[in-house]
Picture 1: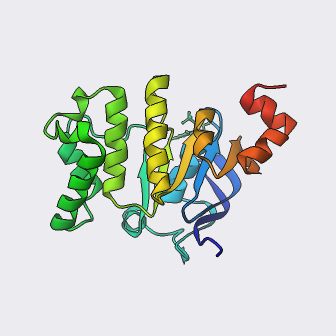
Picture 2: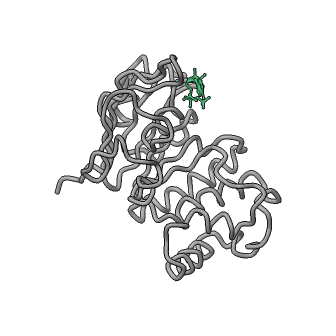
Length: 237
Ligand code: ATP
């Protein structure tokens, strides 16, 4: 059976003021797939993710989600449909763990949010033990876990993550990858922007973004077969 296309962007162009950042970006994410968007600092990853969410307006091109053209939809409408974004900051430091999860799940009914929160505390027991602690009191790694829990509280059809490794030690990066692998195994669809190639472990497919343009699209195996990409991203001859 062919997997359904959850998200597709076609010829996307966007930028800030008069400065164009994205140049004709085509990208697709199929149901249950994990797609990693690789690119250096300033390549335009954050701009692309924000454009998919409607946080940055698309100048040209189209975005479809679950078969509907969402290009002109407001962000909150996209989120309610299941397109959920986890930014690099991910959490509100001045709020408690429980409040952050509540914000993530704000579109759920009270009873659904209660059920969802209990599930999340089962998955992240360290958060459940400290529900009333401020996010600011958590370590960087725990904060990132809270960011993931907050995003999952919205019950995403597609979770879009902006550099989940940012600010984390290698040990916590490993932990984040481990947690994401568990959700992936449960059928969660993920689009992850990263510069850390460790995330390729999770990837069904990869896009590289360079100067606001897609360079390569394909599997990790195909990336390894490409000499230029191997040198650029894996530092191997
Ligand atoms: P990083 O890993 O540093 O977040 P990135 O690949 O996510 O990099 P973007 O943040 O999308 O890249 O930035 C792409 C380009 O757009 C950069 O040249 C950046 O300076 C510019 N840019 C980003 N945000 C803005 C903004 N709010 N106003 C003007 N220019 C911006």
